[in-house]
Image 1 (cartoon, rainbow, N blue to C red):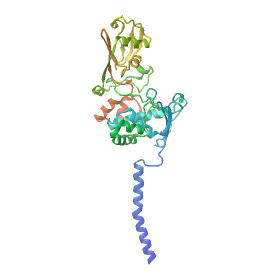
Image 2 (cartoon, one colour):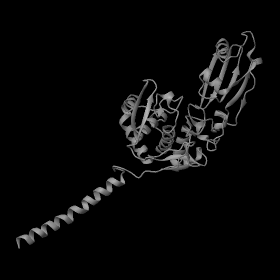
Image 3 (cartoon, rainbow, N blue to C red):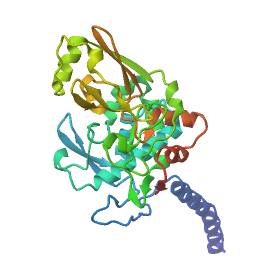
Image 4 (cartoon, one colour):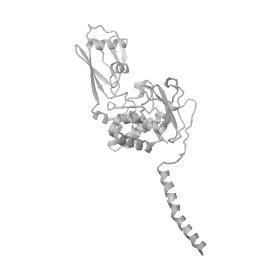
Length: 336
């Protein structure tokens, strides 16, 4: 009789405990708290930029910190967090941040599989924005955000977790997910900026950019400064010459980017002018007086691909991150 009662008690306790264990395991899986996740294979070939996507926080990447001249290795998840933090204001809408995270992860995968790594110390990717895309460490984020660190760090990690593993492809090849801060109201095509056609990097409308408080900027140089800087570009100007006679009408795109402008006897690209005079974009107009040259500039950055300000504007109008991505990158697929 005693053994019978003990058996009944044991069965009763088992019935209580078993559902609790099952519910606990299901909750962890739904939240992505698993030791491994399903891997996704992308077809690769010698001449493609396709990559294997592990789709796990444990997949690692080596980053060359250009200023410190050293490599550091971290999970791809941590890299995407640091890249988004470097590239987009955390005050932006969550859907815009998700779009940025997908773009950063896309570039992470593409560059990780690039064969040419000598110039970046053998690393997979550099944090030098003139070469690849930005990245900042958690300590740098603390310094950047100050008292807002906890709020922004929580927002950042939540956003990245929600889309982590998603990336852009076109014809089954990983995309060049170009982006810039503010466009002119129309994004630029890759062909106009980099000289080669890219079917998904074409000009699209992005009207929200014109509402940015930093949409326009003005930079003024004295005549002597202008003459000196142009000399560095290989253009010789007599200081006695009237600049209105030697600065020609620029050839521009529909987005306003200056392709070429003739100054004195030489044709100069808008990008070369932008770099030489430290302008915010190559979309500019020139105003000339007797003693000064003024550049009136629209936008910030090269203008190709996703406009970050435009993405935030779209998000605040109700667009989701995938709608934003498919607006700025034409004909792409979002894979995971």
